[in-house]
Length: 125
Image 1 (cartoon, rainbow, N blue to C red):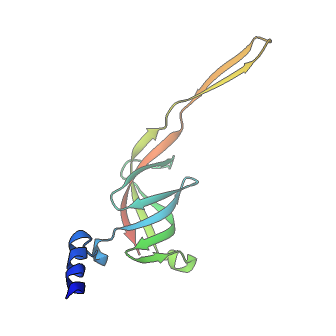
Image 2 (image 1 turned 180 degrees about the vertical axis):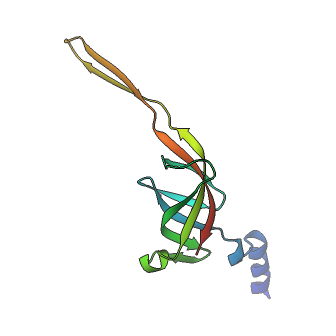
Image 3 (image 1 turned 180 degrees about the horizontal axis):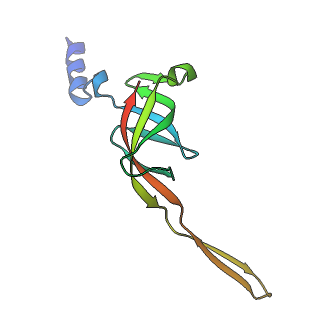
């Protein structure tokens, strides 16, 4: 009797999660970096050729579907992560200063990386 009451108390505090409540997400390679993505995410990656609305396929490195984790290369070859190009973007401005003491040498330079904003549309396992 006491065990049943404790079980109900634990369920009220920490309800059990169904497998359908877990989000499917993937770790993909995008522009030399690894990004964690789920359907509907918008992220910035290195510049990809294409116009707004074009489709892009990203290479999955890991797939988490509920309690199942897939990292086998043979199984990941069947998985596709599809994204849609939202548009071009620019990264933050980086200021580069070079200075040499006692010689009068100063050089100032700036840089902004060209990026592409993409929206994840589907993760097909």
